[in-house]
Image (cartoon, rainbow, N blue to C red; front, side, top):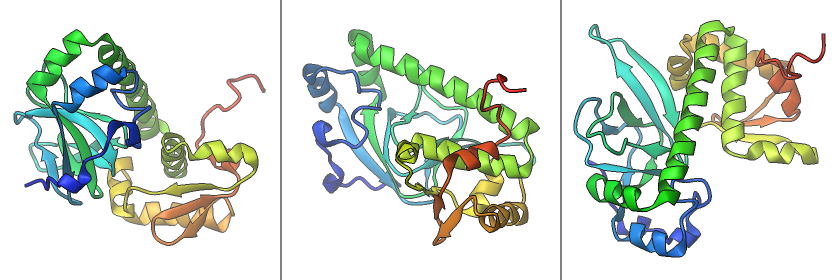
Length: 247
């Protein structure tokens, strides 16, 4: 069961994802209309938000926390196929179910909309439809990027790529231009990182230790990573950072 807390209610104007979520292009009047059909749900770490194939009566945005998308094969093997970070959208308008299990990785708060009223609002509000299309295309780009990471990259490159993706999503890379260290608050345990990247726990720990030993990252507790030189970490991703301009 999810935990619905009235204390979780957030005014749209004060919402931390206001300018990135599906409602980011809405006018004040449109936000008031959405406010009439929204509610908040909070899930504990490890709690299932939605089972793949089951009917999902709501859609919504991640306000705080992280969830995983995973799929289980007939023999019980499970593959994590994606992450939902703050501002990401949960659910599919026009579809009653999701193909994947959605599970809270950390405590997570969702800004939810009842699916049927949201679909009606979507038809009447081009700003929402346009933003949802943008986010869907971004998800497609992210899926293609992840195919490359899983299919062709080494273990070291996978770890560096994941750290870079999280930093980019958290906007923490903006501080790198000022010469400050980039701070990455990892939303995943090392076990979850191993599952997501298709690696063993020992390999993840070994690669993180190697990056630390070489001064590319520093650890501040179990989940916080400091990156003194973000370009140096990005070089470890194996991506063509110069676009092929340099031989």
